Length: 105
Image (cartoon, rainbow, N blue to C red; front, side):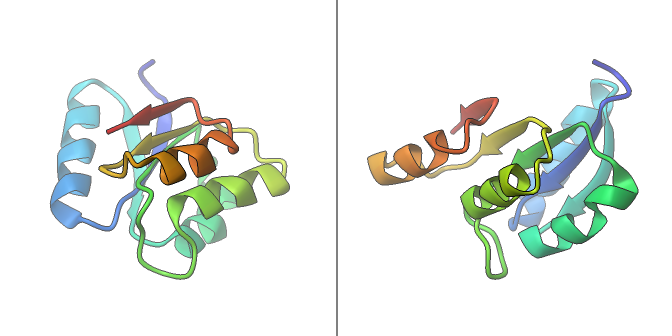
């Protein structure tokens, strides 16, 4: 899906850079790389992303799951793909409630 506009939410800069590089090589447009969900909420209307790649653990007040819940609360219907090392049952159950497009560990 080239020309898909993606926001990456990741607090580990090396992981974020790797994701951004790989997506660019595949022809996707990474429009922002952020480490706080609050920052993403501020630019959604301006940047109009098609997809979010979201780590569960983020800097700031909201984690990735809370970010996804806030998207749903605001009726922002864009796919969220969790990209995280968190694979414990409690986290998976919290994430399922947000109806993500995928959960990649």
